[in-house]
Length: 210
Image (cartoon, rainbow, N blue to C red):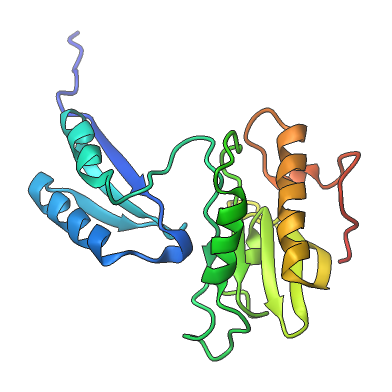
């Protein structure tokens, strides 16, 4: 009986982080050029990142080197780039521009390393929650009176809606609370773990409102 071995070349993908889902024209043009030259697919991920797919193993380093001057690549341990809705001023329901809050979060915490995989942050510019804040480990929702903070949301086959722990607070308190939650998550698990499984842990730093 003979054994059949696959001779198909190995393929990889390369993910470029896009803060607030914004794709700079310089990166868009370079990614298009590289994708055409190497015959790659272009995927806009649900996390609002840009991914080139179908990269042959032998081409991977060259593709990455060409994009490196313009791109920040997804890698293990990086602080998560918040997923956001379009918000104000592009949406007439928007209370804030989530891109601004995302930038301040990354300015304060973006240099952190060792963040566990699958940890997600999302920002919604109004209570309609188009940014998916209630389905993230940490979710921020802008209201007419400030910000609400939700923790423990997740998608997947068994989705969970985040639980509110702060209501109508200011931006400074939200920024502080994000750091507290990331520290708590890091201290309580040595591997990837969604926040929802830590809500009943001793020392959970907030009281669940609803």
